[in-house]
Every structure is written in structure tokens, then in C-alpha cells.
Image (cartoon, rainbow, N blue to C red):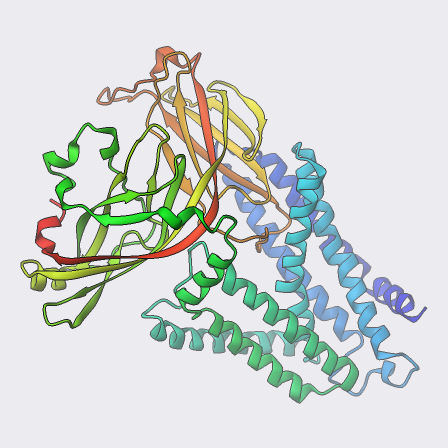
Length: 533
């Protein structure tokens, strides 16, 4: 069989190189196993891991280039053109080589890493398979198609550098189009997977077209046009409008009717965030503030808008993925946009099962200082268009605060330990593949019901599949430090050191069930009345 004959010829010539590349995923898996739950950062292992990952990418790319150049397509000097070798057999042999020498070791190393850590075969295999496919579509196939356009390594490296320079230039154009953000409006949000999936499909279509043109027609000129078009299309996906991306995300909601009764209303009777009115001991008036990773615009001021959220199902979280906010003056002219702290998932509202009635919340909005100084005493209309997600509680797990070592459903393999200063419980968890979108963790005394402040976090990832450019590692690492003693003696905790022996760590996991859009209009508001003190 000609395919196997070509494969054996390539393996004979590249076996040492191929074995080295195939060994790298297993070396990476060993380092991950040594790192374990990472209660303490090991700089040596982290540096070694980064080096091995770079070597893997570089090794797969170089192996692919050398493999293709053994039977080059651009030059007419290759003897396979004069031999009775069917071109589809040649292409199939190259693909077989990459699947067995590059992709298969990645899959096996991923599986081995997850199984050694005690995860089920089904959980490990599904995550390892999707990540392997992600790497194949996003890296190996595009590299194979690209190097088929070159004569040698020098030309391949030069072409890659030229594409890199061109992409940087186009990024500046896209940045100007997107208001200074080269990654587009969906970057660092839960819907970032949508343009990324579009790029994977473009990679696949371009790779199939280029490989077909090169191996069956040897038409390098048209193939280069296809390559250039693919690069431009991939960059255009970064400018995918937010509303288009979120419309698709809403269509994929698991329970699209959950948000039907949710309403967000401005409630000035609650007072300002820092006023006595807002410190009402009524549990419904618990202040919910978001913690955003985005920086506020330079020279900005914060205003805190009191909101009453009704219709939020018990035990759920309302997560604001994006809040497009703008002002309208007395003449009906639309003013410049406000950049909200709630943008990209920084603002959330949770509905505790014990709470009855609307949930009260203060949304932090950042206004450019110049705009605030011009309009702070004027009556303006404030309009906020929300893109929001409802997350439902899917599991509640408990484990001992001291020296726990358990596998928890919907969470993963978790361990706890007392920190060296004996002021906090360190919690570290490993999960195979995708994690819940949001989670809360706290230190509680099950006998008294007392608990310390809740730590809450979300991943900003609604992707329906697991995949990332970080093979071979399907293990996701999360953790938190739960304080129970202040070394300075300034803070006291409901669950202190005297209770730590019987205390538990409670972990709640939430999954996104619905995505929706809604608009809040405040017809007459003075920004100065709600500015942060």
C-alpha cells in the first residue's frame, strides 16, 4: 500500500525528530503531575512547563515543515512527480504521520494525566478528544497548509514573519475600528468562544482548500490568495458585533424562559450607596457589588445606581455580561457613552433562597470626568442596555476545613490545608475539562450555622465545548484562601480559629441556563446625586 510505504519512508528519515516531539506531551504531563494542586507556587516547575510547551509548539511546527519538504510541492525537482505516486496517497501519508506522531501522543498524554489524578475515563476522554481536535484545527492543519506553499525552512520562516508583520498592521486598523480594542467587543467575555470558533472553521476551510490546490493542482498562486483571504477573514472575526454574538448565545440557552419574569428597575428610594438609607438591615437590602478585572477609563468618576431586581429565581445569580450605557440630554441628543464597571461580567446580583422580594443592588458606572463635570447638575436620561446571564445552582459540596482530600461532583478533586501563618484555610481544586461558569466558596460552622464572608468567582466562558491552546493539559486549577484570623487583630470572623477543627468548606457551583437582553431607562436623573463619595 503506497500510503504506508510513504509513511515508513518518512519515519525512517525523521524518526529521531518524531520521537522527540512525541515525548514532549508526556514530559509536560509529568510536570503537571508534580505540580499537583499547587498550594505553593513552584517557580522552577512553572518555568520548566513554559519551556516544554514552547518546545512542543516549535517542535510540531518544525516537524510538519520538514515532513512536507521531504516531498516538496512548490519546486519541480522532486522525484515523486516522476514516480507513479498518486497525489492523494502522498497527502494521506503526510496526514497519517502527523496524526500518529504529533496528535496521538497529545491525546494519550491528556488521558494519562487525567486518569492518574483519579478522574473517570469518560470525563477525561471527552475533554482530551475535544482539546486534541482544537489543536488539530487551530495549529497542526494550518501549519501543514502553510508550509506546503514553501520550498524550504528558510522560506517558511520568512513567510511566517511576513504574515506576522501584516497581521500587526491590520490589528491597528481593527483597533481603530473597535475604539482602541484590537481584540474586538467580545474579548475577555463569555461569548469570546463564538469568534474563536469562526476562526477555527476558517482555518479548516482554508487548510482544505490550500492542501487540495497544492497536492492535486500544484497551484501555489491561487493557494497564496486563499491564505491571504483567510488571514483577513480571521482578523475580521475579531470585529464581530456584540449584539450578533450575543444573539447566537441566546439561541443556545438551555432554559430560555427562566429570564421571562426578570425586571431591572431604578429605585431612588434606596438612597446612595454610602448613605444611611442604603445600610438598611433588611436582608433584601444586601449590597451586591461587582468586582471587574477591567480598568476604568482614565480620569473617570464613579456613580452608583440603586437598582431593584425582581423576578430572579431563588438560588440563582444574575450576571451582567455587558452594559452599553449612554446619556441623552434635554434636547434628545445622544451623548457620549459611559464605560460601566459592569462591562464584561464585572457586575453580578445573587438571589439567596432566604431572601423574599426584589434583590437590591448598586451598579457601579464609570463616567469620564469631563462629561460628569459638564452634566452633573443637569437632568439627563440615562439608558442602559444589558446583556445578562442567569446562572442556576447545580451543586453544593462540603469538605472538612483541615486536610481534606476528596473528589466532589461538579467541582473536581479538592484538597484543603492550614496555611503556614495559621490565619487561613487554603483550598485547591483540579477539574478535568470544563468547569462550572461560576462558583462560591466559604468557611462555615455546620453546628452553629455561622459562616465567614463568601468568595465568588466566574470564568467568563460559555463555550459548549472544551478546548484551548494549552495541550496536553485538560486539568483546570482553581483555589482560594479562606481567612479566619487577622494577624493584626483588626478583623474578627464568625468562624474563628477556635472553631476551625469542626469547620467545613462549602462550595457551590452554578451553570448558565439563560441569556437575555433588557433595557433600563431612567428618564430624569442628576449624575451628581449618585456619584461615589
